[in-house]
Amino acid sequence: MSEIADYAAVLDRLKNARVACVGDLMLDWFIDGEVERISPEAPIPVLRITEERSMLGGAGNVVRNIVALGATATFASVIGYDQAGREVTALLEKEIGRTPGLVVEQDRPSTIKTRYFAGAQQILRADKETQSPLGRAAQDDLLQRCVAIVGECDVLIMSDYAKGVLTPTVIEVLIARAHSNGKRVVVDPKGADYARYRGAYVICPNRRELHEATGLPATTDEEVVAAARHLRDNCRIENVLVTRSQDGLTLLAGDEVHHMPARAREVFDVSGAGDTVVAALATAL
Image (cartoon, rainbow, N blue to C red; front, side):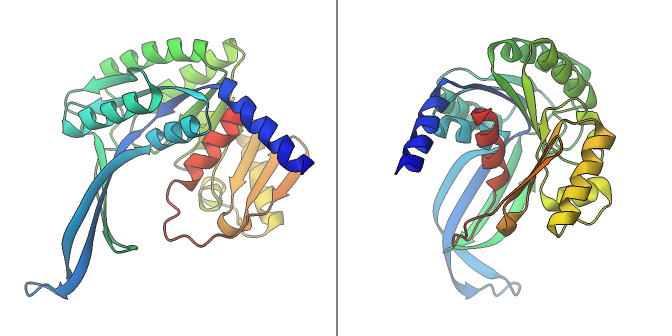
């Protein structure tokens, strides 16, 4: 009972946290329906649509998790001048209770990920996106907005989905600004070049991303620790937290290693689990 009380006390303190998040914002669109026949035009199922719904995705899902934990979230990103951009803006305003720091880049399409479900089974995902880096004007505008929110937060999350918002310049300036303000930086990374995140307090790759970034195996406990040490030492990042699906988490903090097992649950869609880990870690810090 005392352990439960301790957890309750910690959770109650999370509402005092102020967490800033910068990263790639997406609109997640879900189309639910039923499949009762195969199309006469091609060997594909015909989905009879029964419901359509949308929610924040990418870095927006990180914000949803921060708010769900009771903390205060601030956010900055770049969207396109389109309907999806307007929709994610409205969803963010509702989530965080204020106008988010969004930059509009005219020729940039807002990222949309559309998932089609037949009952509980996902049968297709269609993505509309660009991976092009920001133009100079949008990048400068984003950095101006970021400077303000870094000064107001307790910790900064960089949620990188490789959609062009977190350019090398944006990453470098944000980490330097966080350091000058005495703030820790938590990174959810993408790609193979983690050296661009140098100076981060903690980086949170999954097992596959750790392997791709280091070229080292990352299956067993020992392999994950060796790859995490390689990543930390070569990229000059203080700590590494590896998410390992059903095998839980591995934290490399200085010379200490902590393996935290997962508790199995029956789920059919684990998308966004990494966002939850990053949001919870940053809010707890």
